[in-house]
Image (cartoon, rainbow, N blue to C red; front, side):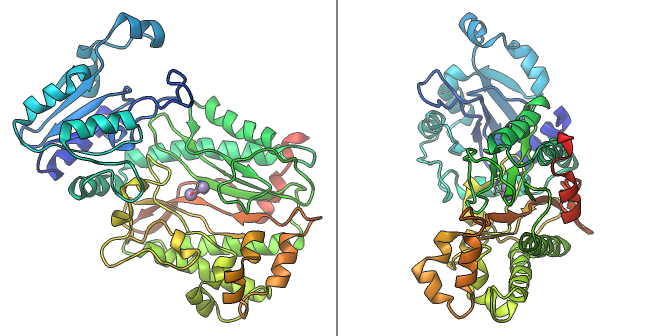
Length: 470
Ligand code: GLY
Ligand code: MN
Ligand code: MN
């Protein structure tokens, strides 16, 4: 777990980077239907960055002028102890967190207004609407939790983004911890695969492995023979010889840091010739992007490198026509690779995505309007310590291959007839999709692949399939 020293150093760096009081919130419980039936508590990541295992409804006032951090927690009551267990008294929490003071959150507004002494207090919206409403009441702001950057003002977003974008060794260790559990989950699922099994049984193995190690999932597990549905959380299919299983799953460690990994394998234990050809193109595309990682490289160039390798491979197969550069320029590659190559990773699986494109697409760089590349989640220059995913894929999506606008636009560059045959192969079950995703840290010398131990060479994957079934 990150140590007290880590959290103190992060809070000190944050105090250095703000010019007035900032009030951050952990957020509270989120109900899944009626109010008392709640999801497990998960603190907002910008709060979790500064505090070990925060309590629901905790808040913290950072005052750069006084160089103090005041933590606000619920008063300890017998009723809370009855329903949720006892919590340590404030004196103990003061020592555990190493803050300057702890005050009751029940009187938050009054304490914050007193401590602010007339200065403007900045805050940010969190996913819990009750907390965001309280933040807005206290600060007089009208922040909303959305994906276009309305959750925080630019100065505060810049300060948080600058800190959270460069992972320190302790954070890399936490991501490695999540990666080790994710490794076990993927390997166990691959080893348990056989015709006659089910997606649900493999999902139980993946998520059971996370729980076994005290982790949770970082995002709902994608495990499907319908891998062409990118965020497919349905686990209702059986597994048949000829199917490909696509597993996109990552553990979140108790500290909140996570992994995000995709592997694809054949139910039968042997890729057929077409699956092998596609698989090898995706692997080449992934390795080519990873090989380009260096500080200063533009993230979009990693995306374009993967896109070119995919275009080149599909030209060799006759599914695309033209030069790879021209195909990528026109966006024809996106018929088969219709998403971005990845995103930052850390306490959020799409790290800081809620801060909006102002931060992920800095000045002078706008999101592409082209189909496929418009889903690229960031276009920043890589920094040492930045952690991100590399996750190219090839999919045969009937809805794309029969879309009138796309088929007309790319008629000269794509063999739609053959592609649609592939999308409907295997008795109409279809090809599905192949994605390979790893978590990469940018070091001065290049990429460190934090999830490299999870098998992805085609032969290694094949020999693992079904190996737990004797
Ligand atoms: N697991 C979602 C993603 O890879 O972005
Ligand atoms: Mn993923
Ligand atoms: Mn990802």
